[in-house]
Amino acid sequence: MKAGDFMQEMFNNLKEKILNEDTWIAIGTGLLKIMAIMILSAIVLRIGKLIIKNIFLVRAKAPIRFSERREATLKKLLENMLTYVVYFIAIIMILPILSIEVKPLLAGAGIVGLAVGFGAQSLVKDIISGFFIIFEDQFSVGDHVRVGQFEGTVEEIGLRTTKIKNWTGELHIIPNGSISEVTNFSLYNSVAVVDVSIAYNEDIERAEKVIQDFLKDLPDRYEDIVKPPELLGVQNIGTSEVVLRIVAETLPMKHFNIARMLRRELKVLLEAHGFDIPFPRLVMYSRSDEQGEQKQLGKE
Image (cartoon, rainbow, N blue to C red; front, side):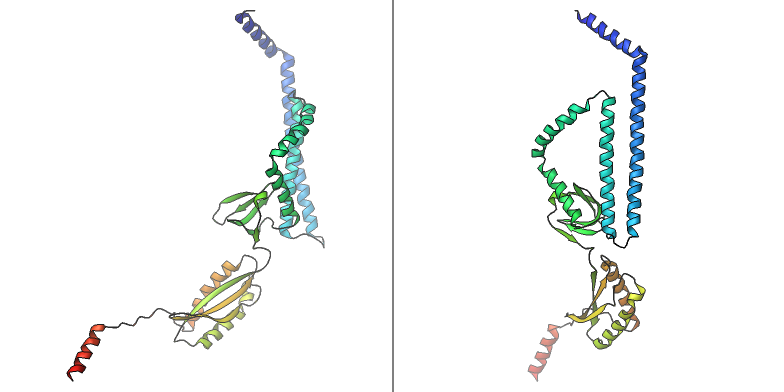
């Protein structure tokens, strides 16, 4: 068969298929089935996420419940797992419509999975580590943590990766298998530490009394303060000031705001009571004047 005849035959077959009514009916039917599967998947996802949300709302009213941190983590994890399952089932249903046999793929998946498993040890490690992070409640969504060199708020915990958002906006995506040490700042109350400098010529006892009277009413004014702050006393004696230290127990990760508030209000308080701000003092010593006095004494 000549090349021209072969091309002509292929063209005629393609033309026949294009003009065949059954071909277009099959394509249209397949497209409709695929669209129906996609729409049904979206509906199942929405209903499933709504059910998960309602389950956690019901648990919130139960006498025995998880912490809000852990509930947010489990809710996000269940939604991700539901998404993976629905998408997998949808793909399995769409493949036969595209004339792709599913059974051979599923049969070969076991052999391929075994081969890939030996080369995907890091993936398995990430999944196992993610499971234990959630199971042991090491940290949850919304916690402020430090993982290695990264520090920030946990945005999402998956079975493979953890997303941590820094306070400057960067999002760090960390494989769970690489998380060996975690510092969680959100489990227990924080402590704000504020140092106040008083000039040497001021009455330290009077300054301490003024500050202590001021600290008593702070928990009523600021809900982030757990109990009245404590004036520990003289922390340091510098070259031009006496440093008093104040500590305040706050809600988790609220110590930065409370420390800034204390510094501002303490400045206003001390100025209102007439306390001077300490500043370095210099004593000028003139060597020429000393030499002149020595000469005058020699003449006498």
